[in-house]
Structure formats: C-alpha cells, structure tokens
Image 1: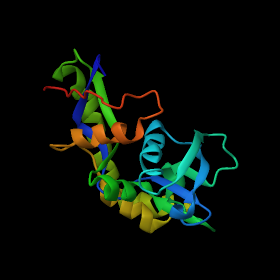
Image 2 (image 1 turned 90 degrees about the vertical axis):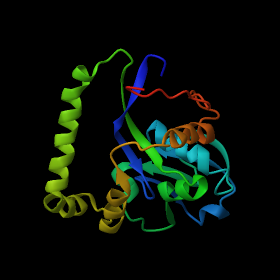
Image 3 (image 1 turned 60 degrees about the horizontal axis):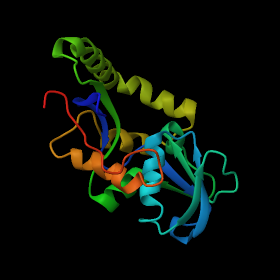
Image 4 (image 1 turned 135 degrees about the horizontal axis):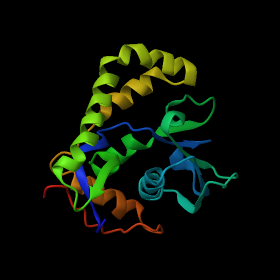
Length: 200
C-alpha cells in the first residue's frame, strides 16, 4: 500500500451478514482437525476463514487450499454463499465476524495511486455512484429473477444487501486492521498494515 491510498467513499462494508459462508457436515464447533477447502474464494474469503475457524469455531485447520477435496470445512463466497444447502451446516461468516470482533467486515476497497488528484478520480467515482443508484432504483426488477435463476435464498440475499454499506465510516480503519491481524498469519499479507487514505 505504499504506492496507493484508500478512497473511503467507495467500499463494500457489511454490518452483519456477508456473502462468505462456511459449510460443514456437522456443527462447525464439532469439527476438530481438518483441511479447509477454499471454493472460488477471494483473498478476503481466505482471510476471514483464517481469522475465524481456529479462534471462533475452535477448529484446527491443517491447510487452506482450493484442492482440499477431503476437507470437512468448505468456504464459499459470492452467490454460492447465499444458496441453501441440502445437508450439513451453512454458517454466515460475516455474522460470525461481527460476533467475534464486534466490527464490520470490509470486503472491497477502491485504491488509487498516491499521486492521484480529485479531478482524476472523479469520473470513476461518478460512474460507481450512478451504477449504485441504478441498482437501488431497479431492485424490484432484478432481485427475484436473480434468486430464481441462481437458486438463491431470497431471505439471505435481502439480509446481505440490508447489511451492506457502500462507504467507509470513521473508525473503520480498525476493521481493516482486524481482518489482517486476525487472518493474515500464514499468508503473504502483512499482519500489521499501515492504511493510508485519499485526502488525509
């Protein structure tokens, strides 16, 4: 982050539920030693899992891998995390994160070069604002068709969208630090990051 800064007016920040889920064949607190399969997960999905599975659920993960086919713990993200499961347990890791840290979960940020000016980034910010406004205005048109086409839980989709905020708020640097301090151990990411913000 030494060459880039965070733009606080654009983010995906979840107060409670988030589109990251843990699937287990039995209750998560009954799973002991296991490998963890990261099924189409981003880096954030992995960091959240690393931060929670041992410290919150009491598991002893032996490895985190996309190829761990014998894993009793599977982490999924995005639309897959909102689907109902036919058997086993499906835990919302955004909700678990809030309980564990008492902080929101920030999954996406906008970063720009440190030397960027307001004039340079304004067109991108305007485009993102317009896209968000259109999504909100037309939500009745797309929510149910999306749920039907993707076999999603409407309750989970509405809960996730209701939990989401599009900007960082005062004090959210703590949430960013917590994600890496809890989940960064054993990864290529720093566990004590120095976040820098645009205009600060």
